[in-house]
Length: 263
Image 1: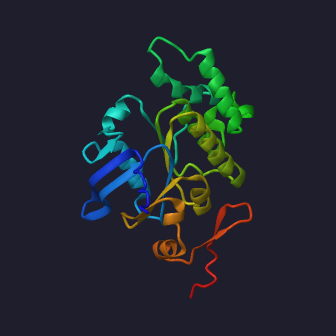
Image 2 (image 1 turned 60 degrees about the vertical axis):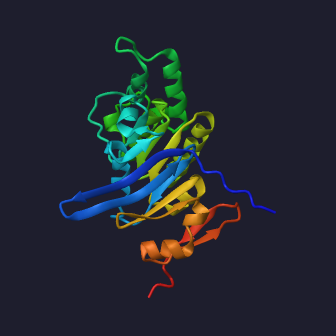
């Protein structure tokens, strides 16, 4: 009996011969990498692994990166990629509602304003991300976690095929971390959207993402499903610290990182 071969996944980003250096210091070097479409992808790895540099390269490198088969610059000009930075700037005097509605402007003619349908979409997303009570507050006056959630809602309002997020849970408490990941998954079930995010929390990556890219010292150490990549031996080697995944009663995955076996 011939075993059926696994069909390759459609490609979201294709990277060829990518190298980023500052002076003589090489911070990222990828010979070849294909990032699958129709999924949530986590980029994980220790500090200085090149995770944020990879994300920035997906936005900026027009020679070595293609998105859905096109030069990445073409997708950017069409407003086809949304980006949420690790530390967004919020000097604007806009309210939260006005700020998130900026995400609709790539879809509007220069002489039009967001429609009633756009405003209804904003209200729905603000409710889903626990921001309804802050809708009329100035976005610059919010806490770091509240601003981060507003930036995520603005990106979702853009309704692109691709959203890149650099440590989106950086300022969020535990509840809002899981709320964000859960709502993002629900959003993907109703729209053809791909989410690629840098994460430090291994549990969030394992339980909410379909594909994981593990990086170390500017290189790709492994890429595949969480089960394939996030093994004890692989994580312990890359993080240089004991990391033991284990199964929870509810079927989820958690990680023992207490280092009780460390010398």
